[in-house]
Length: 230
Image (cartoon, rainbow, N blue to C red; front, side, top):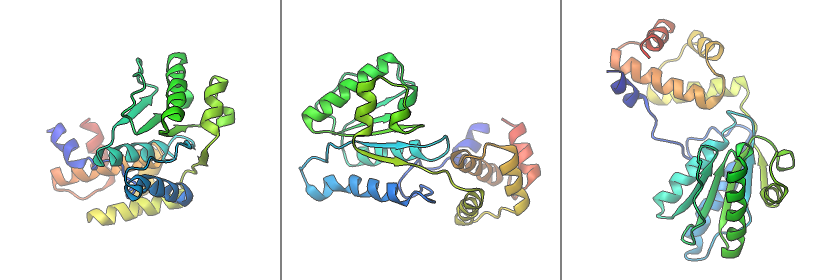
């Protein structure tokens, strides 16, 4: 039963369309142009100038990187992916069209060596690189040759949404589902759970699924009952 509730509440996955842009219009516009450049130019390669996104937890940088990953796979492209959870990074492959690196600030020495190797090959083979981290390139505690490569291209600092913007996004997302969120419920969500937007949207997914499963409206007692069942 619990698995059914989770399945009903899951979103379709990150995309550029469902990114809550807030004050980050510039980075979204850049990524849309970048993503469409290959289709527009046919067989011409994307620009090898790297893009680096940085921001605090919940600012949306991983959402954007995974959205790009999904969109590229849907276009039939082959992607190199590296994040801090990958203990044994893959060797660079010439058939990769794009290299994606998530949370580079957390890379260990082995991952940093792999990332540097990927950068060198990306320049040689004219491949695009997109990366994310939690601080600007100059503040990354990484080897110098990797840090400078992360910072020499397009760099965007993502800003987290304000509380009023988070409330507006929650309200809009709930309305799109045909779900009513009272001010009391939103107050409860913002005071009892993680306040970053990604976590709040996941919570809304779960609440919607649980409400559908139990045929009840979303209220504070429903949220408490849902959490007691997990």
